[in-house]
Image 1 (tube, rainbow, N blue to C red):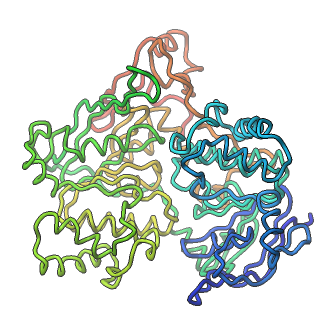
Image 2 (tube, rainbow, N blue to C red):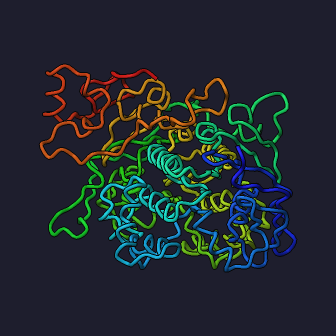
Image 3 (spheres, rainbow, N blue to C red):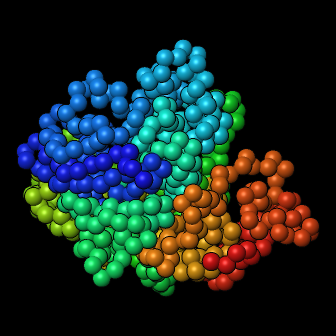
Amino acid sequence: MTAVLEVSGLGVTFAGGVRAVRGVAFGVAPGEVFAVVGESGAGKSATALALAGLLPASARVQGSVRLRGRELLGLPERDLAAVRGKEIALVFQDPAFTPVHRIGGQIAEAVRAHRRVSRRAAAARAVELLRLAGVQDAAAVARAYPHQLSGGQSRRAMIAVAMAADPSVIVADEPTAGLDPPVRARVLDTLRTVQRRTGAALILITHDLGLAVERADRIMVMRAGRTAQIGPAATALTGPSMPTAAAALLRSVPRLGHAGGRANAPTVLAVDGLVKEYPARGVARRRIRAVDGVGFDVRAGEALGLVGESGCGKTTTLKEIAALRTGVVFGHDAASLSAAQRRELRRDLQLVFQDHALDPRMTAGAILAEPLRAHGRRRSEIAARVPDLLNLVGLAPAHAARRPDELSGGQRQRVGIARALALDPRLLLLDEPFSALDVSTQAGVVALLHGLKTRLGLSYVIAAHDLAVLRLLADRVAVMRRGRIVELGDADAVCDTPAHPYTRTLLDAVPPSPTPRERPSRAVEDPRPSRAVGDPPPDPRGGCPFRTRCPVFPALEAPGRRRCAEQDPALRHLAPDHAVACHFPGQGEPR
């Protein structure tokens, strides 16, 4: 089939002589899914931006980009703007919505940029596009502001923008980065549905090899700005001639393997019956229960993982613990602490944020010095401690002079961890420490945290949505859904023999290992549907809140269905260290 987009000899050089892309060449046919895979800094995003002419003016672009035979490189900006969005559409890693305007208005603006329609017709088309992109209650989402959308809704809204002019090529740059596996699967299903409906070519840029093998027809592996290998998804990453780049990426893909065991050690944190409510937006006197009776304990030197979809209450649980408003921390009842005692205890309990939370105006050295100054350390002590902290997390002392925008994603995450370690804590609370990192960088952060845990005797509570990555580090896992723990136990037991059907749903949503024998056999025209569909609204009559989504419930006999419909299951032990909130644990499809 004739390629709709042909790229040859593409080179991108940024100010200062940095060559981000070096001689990349490929072609994409209509209806094809072409994945571009590589580590951070491999040149993937620079390639995507070069295709749409969105690189900064200081960047120098060489080579050829031809769309249906028409050369795009060198076109005047006015001509290129007419192509951008209409013929080539982009779905960005971070949804690029203006925060002060409603979603529907911004989609309508994209419609009117390429079609001569009235404002009313564009607004109606915006709602229609949201509906086509799989957004539930599209009219309400169109009236919402960007900050009111979940991560999955934001990505779908970006897909709706991309569909506005029925483009010939859709370039999706890390469209699922930072999303939990079920939401990631739904967003990818949406992209595939849109592509099949329009017949567009889809260029999928990702660092996730498993995702690329599962979803793409062909794969190009990039390393240091160059094409390391290109070929069919079933064979591109295998064989005796596999290049070093692909082999390194494959070694970094998370494998389900346990990192350690539960030791007979003193308890450093005990939480029992934690509840957190928020007022519902726009509804008087109604409150939303974000965390509903969560309880667990953490031993010295142990890592507990909190896993679940976005909105399940993981981050809220960490914030309540970090605020020292609940639980027993290092033997102290947090609710009865004085202000001075709370401040003293915070040295032993530190939080590592999902988005690093690094001040863009400060250097890494100043960021690491800040908590030391806040706790009264002397200048000489701070000057000696900062390089030690950088060395501890695998960075060089020279990194102290760099600001966050001069560091890679993995380096910023390491600075965030170093800041948390500045006061020699005993317990770290980590909120999505692996989110949006490529697989090899994830592997580096996992190895770093495992090494610190062993060397310093640290305890961890780690909130994450990727159970495959979490299992590499966690000794125990608590699976959360709608503010509750539905399964809790040894990481191996929970992952190998999941007792709750929701846990099986999370495991099924993890992309397969990118090897030919494990690649699912499916036709390109019939993508595998995700089992992890969105939650229906909770049944006001009570009963098990998961039954409307449960794959086991429809197959139960009438007495069993009646029990699930009338009784909300409590967490009960199947083994000394494996508990589940399910009336019929372990039933359903085996893994």
